[in-house]
Image (tube, rainbow, N blue to C red):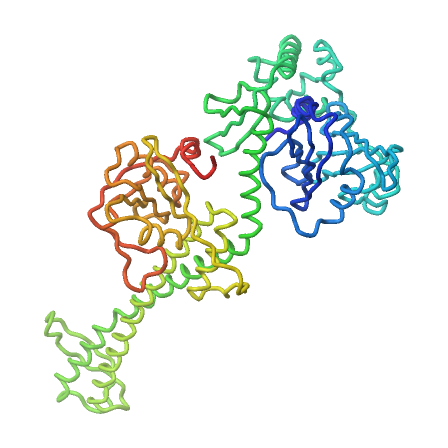
Length: 567
């Protein structure tokens, strides 16, 4: 991502329409996020200010946030000083990721007061600070005391001090011809030198400058520098791009040469950031809430794999039962030749016509020795049966937990509780305490629409899979699942889908599987009438027949375009 100083400059310019707007409401929906609802041009605009360590930013958001019933103290301070006030100015400090919002408001007795909201976007050191017209701190989201920070103090009553700078240059305040003065061409790594020299540059923009010319020289660097900076002053083209080889996703306010034709263009900077950070934020929330669940499932997979290894060893040792039975038979057949006190007997194996040497217990009679081997045979026979049963059960458990492990890679926050409940029902975890008044949530499936207009449903956990396959779909609908690979159930709600729809459903089945990042994933498909759930089987487990197989390669952008739930 690249919410750098250049992007901040573009965003501040885009937010100038808010000047003169009235602050209608202030909320703090998340611990590190403030939303100022500003009434301007007969419309409410949600200005989001986030100091999240990874997602710090500022933009207008259309997303609806749930606000806590009891607002945090920080939100109360902002409300007291800012609600009802008017935005006087929004400015960027230099070319840095620091923005100040001047607000004219009224105090409790109706006197005019002036306040400034300062947003400092600095990664894990990001902060949001409210100061008065003398630049004294009223409140800061993160307090910095003299004991914890040697550079400045951020506490109510202290004078606001700017963060320590690295003495970088504002790229808009020098001419392109001056760039060479700050670059050592003999040292190489021009992109890194640009990054360390100029304020507000990100690796994305420095790499763009360096890649504009085949070689970086004292002639080509100023040309590339001037060319890229000139484009940053032009019309915005909000764009996001995903590198399918690395999986890394970037965005910027203009098209870059390093972005290929698969890049997605948005209508505004605000829409771009809403889409980008919503997906990232959702993954972060899922990671936080499901972290213990992921760890538990991984432990169960490892535990059962270790158990399976031991059971396989026991299964090998149980194969000696046939030898124990043979020894018992041969002792019985040769009992007339054996005397008590013999420690072995050599007998002819009438199955192979080979001589067999059989150990004997000299303290036991020949009959007791024969009975011993028969008992050993019966013990090993029972053991073999039990081991085989345990092997089958352990293999089922491995398959079950690997399936849940795959599901955890695609779940939303709302799906986490369904998986927890399922594991509790299966006896693997303790059941959650639920309010008696709280209704059981309805099962929600993922909806997609094919190119030909057919609805395709995806189950993202076992409860959803069971509901989709056994209740929601009809017998003539088409069902998809990756061949011998843990994955989701996918159903086309059409008795006679087109070949294109079949391919798209297979692609969804491949994507929502353990092999989701692979190519040419084998996907079986058949009609629901050929899919059966064995009695007593674990959730999500089915058998099927009369299937055909397609090979699918997931296309993330195409899948995203098919998703009805995100539109």
